[in-house]
Length: 128
Image 1 (cartoon, one colour):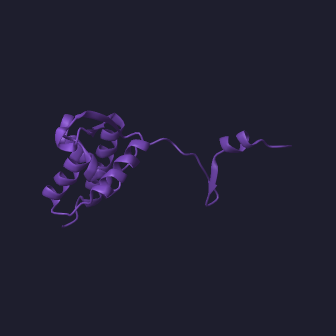
Image 2 (image 1 turned 135 degrees about the horizontal axis):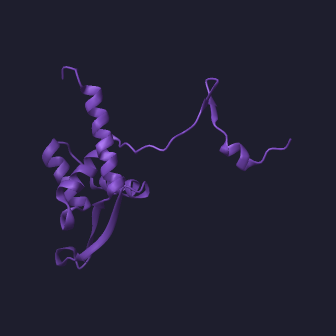
């Protein structure tokens, strides 16, 4: 019997001799992704852009943050479907260039909740 690629892809995968069926789950975030998402949520609206997100993280954590890292993280989060970006109004202090504004979407908020729940579950009962 010949097997098609589509047929093979529809079968559960074997892992340690057991059938494993992947179920969709809420995305979780890496540490810096979490910081960026929370800063964007806190700043909101017309104030959530890469420079203000970097400043918010630095102000609240004392951690130096490179804007390039924020830009790369925002791009990755947008590709994952966890936030959207739009161009804001032109800004004279930016030579007429608009800011790229960040808006977390429901999937991103769910990822923040899932990540925080995992952190809380792992630290519950641990003396820190």
